[in-house]
Image 1 (spheres, one colour):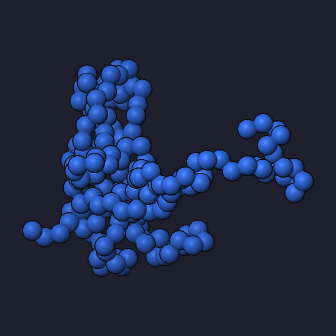
Image 2 (tube, rainbow, N blue to C red):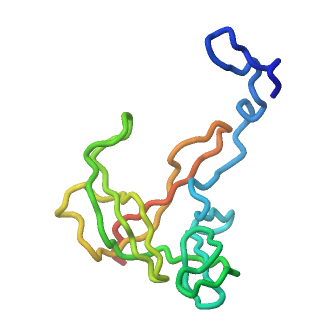
Image 3 (cartoon, helix red, strand yellow):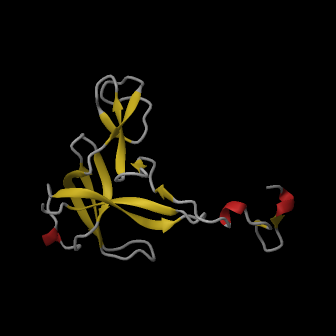
Length: 162
């Protein structure tokens, strides 16, 4: 975009033209975080990075391992969809437009990774939550991006009895 494409008559810099990406049809789904995988044929999952030297597992990309201090390489591993609720909090005040109360927590996965997340399918009441509670991952569309794609987020919920 050049300066000729900008309109400065309204007291700021505004585009005179709208990009094609803002007007094109939706192209599909995309994850809200880079470590959420949305395979076309299977359940979504969280992807971790395993140090090939010592086996430590992390969430998100890394340059070096904090356990053995080696600089890579790392391999991607599929993380478990089940874990335990390590800690939780009920949020009573949030940004405008965000319904409250809701539950946030940290979930420990069997691979040794901890994940911050929202908890769903549980009433935000302390009597419904407990430390060490078994939980399972689920996903849902949280919003649409400006291109019309569904933005998929991950959540955890109490594990359903079998």
